[in-house]
Length: 72
Image 1: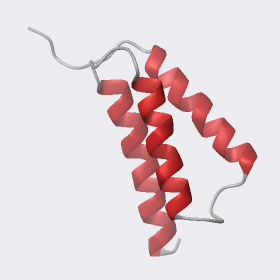
Image 2: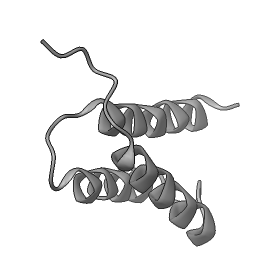
Image 3: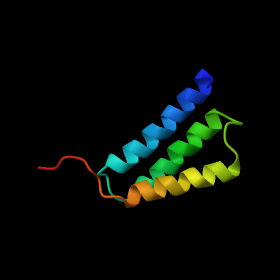
Image 4: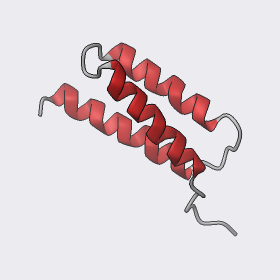
């Protein structure tokens, strides 16, 4: 895997992990999709429309999960 693709993959994982751990509440999905849009526009040609839609679905699913973050 090229360095560019590897960084892209790591960034996608970071978006999904950050979203699933976030306790921000409302607006998390929109923020995740916004960051995904920035990532895709900065790396043209790495994803087609179908893959982008699938990742957006994963982002929505990550938002639906209860955060495993430690709470006091």
